[in-house]
Image (cartoon, rainbow, N blue to C red; front, side, top):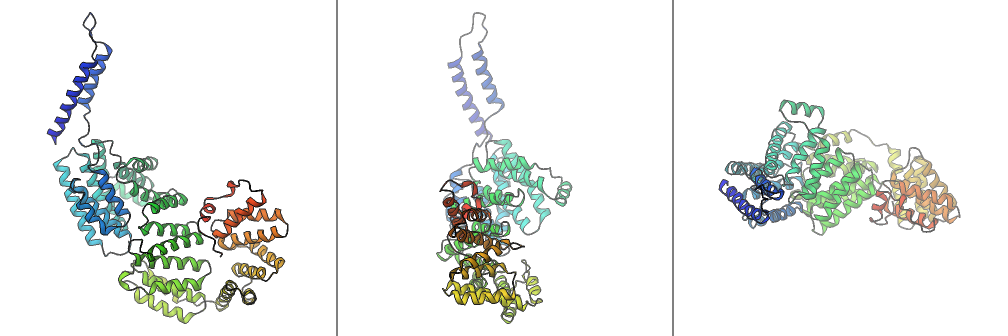
Length: 564
């Protein structure tokens, strides 16, 4: 390596000396050199004092980036064959690091499962040993230190996943040291800023307990702003880690920067690029639910994943279908469509154990029990709960058994379950075109639970179908005025439907106001948002009303026209 470096410097010197002779002006009469001569001499001194890095870029970076893209597409079955054509010419240590990354991303597909842990740890140990040997063999080579850090990085994330935080902190320090050495040797190695930035960021935002641990382990402090800048630098200019940087950045935006919309934006970009990886859509659906309480948008994401899984266009399609049906069932139940949630859970439970994600059968049975209880079918619920207990893994990492046992101890309120069942029966009758049967069932539901805004909204729709417009509008106004407010997907629809009735009766001012309210509701149905936007444009003469379109409203325009 030293000989190679000397040869490079000698070559640079010979070139510079030729250029200096060509540029050197003649001396003046006193023999003094002119300014141009002094500048050329200074340039030669700079070359001597600050030689170029031994490795100014990652060897075969584009080939390795292509492997990383295969990993992010969750095409794990293709990785080994691709690595065989990548190393050589890329360094063997780089491909060993890539194997660890691939194994880690495969674990992320089903993180609670420990099925792949032993293999992953063996790959990580081998890659770390090889990279450490490389740094000893060529200590002045920046990419050797970079791949040493890269071999540790998935292992640190695995330690965090398994709750081994002290080990994660110790090995995180090794990553930081290796990357700092890489950047000292080659400041142009933009990918190295990703790991440095992660360390600086997390060291700054860590809770007090973690900061005490950092103190005892002699770990340096962090800088939140600087860490974010360094990660964004790697995201924009890195050769290898752009997709990985995006994935880590969305975690920061979600949990630490309190910007879930930005996290979704990044995940959508990842999903558009790596459509065969089911993880991104799963996380979009979960964020839509937990952070925005936007059940229609979450359900739309689960349906998209379900469509891809059924077409075989994602990793582990059967497992992905199980997750998609279970996630969709949760959203359907949240939107008071419990009978359809039961259909999805039943289909998920038909799959064999061999393709079930960790704990998925127990979780589906638990949810099925909850759904049956909600409909007042306690005997069927108890059967589902018993099945959930039987299917719960021994280590119960997801704590399913505790949730099932808590549900078993509760007895559903018969009045509430009867009202709920009648509301659902009336809604299905209305969908089937029987407004009379629908209104009869919904009147009974409201007699039992007068404050049920979902049943009241459905009753208003049944009245509208029967031509009783004034009474329908009155019922919608009651839904709008209810306190506590109706669920978002009902409230947005009530605003839109009431606005349409007001517009038909000539009350344009009230209609316009209601359309605007509908647009502002986060978590409304796509149909309600789209019709409200059209209503605003129509009543304002078709002008541009972009100021009314929130991010969620714009998103809803792309998701279809299903009614609640």
